Length: 257
Image 1: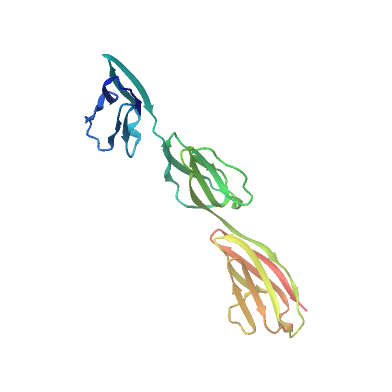
Image 2: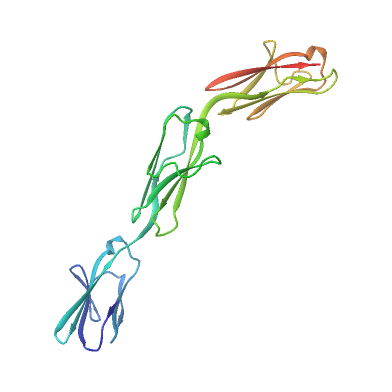
């Protein structure tokens, strides 16, 4: 917008060396540039759908009583942040190294931060495009969020899922006392990624699913061995074996009367 008065005889808008408008005459071919007002008080143009190429100096030239005057305004184009590249979800064995990348554009250049989406995580773990994790642990698995912000608009966020694989660890395996004729249960709980496969043994003999009077129920994080009618022959030492492709572990427990 350029302020004028009734002494003005000629007006024009220029961008760098190009004339956009001279009076009411349009000199540029860009359809986004239109004359907004040419009155006794103002001479204004409008640029629609502004993009970064419109940034630069704009000059309003005014001729009054043979005395030219110019006023200049510098257009600064701001662009909201956009994440253009981010790492894919990743699966890695415990102890390995992870490198995550998040690339974003915007004007001004956006600030990029990484944080671990976890109840135990506090604050940012990286204020950079790159996040490096050396010797990753199972506690560091989960989602990692990249945020790009530059105060032009709300920050944009995207997440990467990091799966940390580790061998089974049996967390609970207790011996149980059950009277003859009652229902008995032995429980074996194990954490592992990928989930563990379970097998039960009694005195080095594997127990098969469907064996008379027994039921083996395997889930992702536990296995349950049920005796529907405990007999004297059922008493003894039982071993639970939990395994995945990274390793195996076992725990022994006793069913007693």
